[in-house]
Image (cartoon, rainbow, N blue to C red; front, side):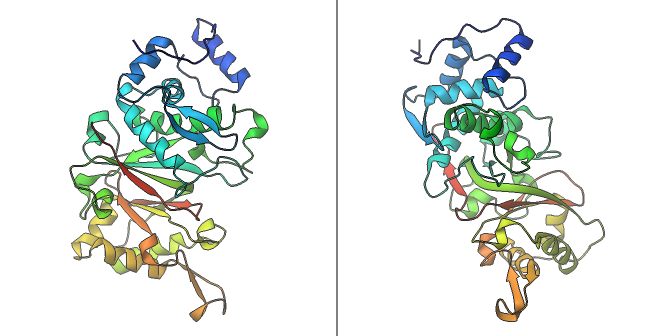
Length: 330
C-alpha cells in the first residue's frame, strides 16, 4: 500500500456540502470536484511507478512543490481516471521546463493546451473528432482541468478571488486537451513532424491564449481557402504580433482535404498561410507588412475535428515555444 503524506481532512459526506467546502477554501475552479479520498488517490498513483514524494515541478508564483502525490490528488479532484495520470505527469514536466515556462499570474489569460498523439489517444478515450475542443469527453476535459487545478492549488495556494488577475479571462483556463485526428490527417502528424516515431505516444503543450473558429464553406481552391484562413489569423491586438510566438492552427478535416487534394505538403500549406497572415503597418518593415510569426516554421498545424467547413486558430503568449515529450513505459 502506498504511504501518503498529505494532510488528512475531515470532509463532508454528501456531495453538495463537499462542493461548498472546497469553494469556500478556494480549492476548486468553481466546478464540483471528486473527493480525493485515500482510496482514489492510491488508485491514481497505481498507474505510475514514480515515488509519490518526487517533486515534478515547483509551481509559480509561490513555487509550491508539485509532488507526484499532490498531482494525483488534484487529478482525482478534476475527475481523471488512473489511465490519464501518465499524461498529467508528463504535462507537469513540461510546465516545469524553463524552455516552456508559463506563469498563471498576470493580466493575459494564458493556459496550457495539450495536444496528444499516438496510440495513447484511443487507449484513454481522447476525442479527436467532432467537438474535440468542446464538451462531452471526459478525458479531454479532466486532463486539462487537472493541470489548471494543480497550477492554482499548488502554485497559487488556492483559487481565491484576486489570485486570478486576468483582465477578462478565457474558458481555456478551466482546462483544455485534445488529440490529433491522425487517421484523417493527409500529412504526417505533429509528433512525427517533430522527430518521434509514428508508434510513439506524445504530448505537446502550448502556451495558449485565445480561440477563434474560422468558417469557409465556399472555397474549393487552396488559394481561396488560404486567403480566408490566413486572413483570419491577422488579428490586431493578439500577442503573436508583439513578440516571437508559436500560434496553433487546428485545420478541420474538410479544409485539410482541400489542400491535400491539390498535392500540397504541410510545409507548402504552412508557407502559403503565412504569406496571407499579415497586418499592414506602413513602413514599419519592408513592404509595410508584419507577419503573424517571424517565419512560417513558427506556425504549428495539426488536423482534428469531424467533417465540416471549419478550422480553429489558437493564439499563443509568445516568448516560449511549445514542448513535445514522449510518454514512456505505457
